Image 1 (cartoon, rainbow, N blue to C red):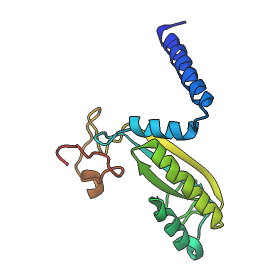
Image 2: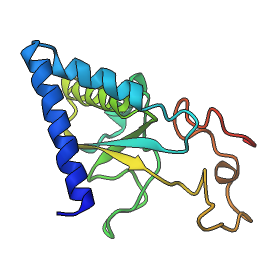
Image 3: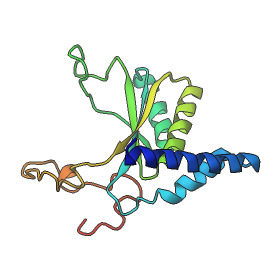
Image 4: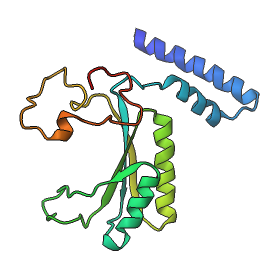
Length: 175
């Protein structure tokens, strides 16, 4: 067993002890975890952010506005542009699915917004097919130091991007 494996075993043992203590005291584990994660997730001066995607059955013009409003309520943005995922797709709104995206710098907060959006869409009669949260460790739009990109001819949104998520890059110099 290597050093990394020993460290994992030690951490798992410590975590088990903490969980047992919390259970013995009949504490709400969900609430404790939520509180702990909020304290250890300060990414305000970081370029790191989370991005959530919710995929739903195709949404057409008659219901699109209700979909847009449901997304906005949870600070998600529906994809209004066409993205050709399949060779059979044509230059119109996809007949196969629709999706929206939300971003955040704290996982717990974004998870909460994502789950509330999924519940709201479901309650409004939309069929949710999938939701996921991705951890964006690097985004060349905000930090291309590992491999500098040629900026000539890039669109304005690439040259002068807004913050990737509310509160992100709060301490960034030169933006």
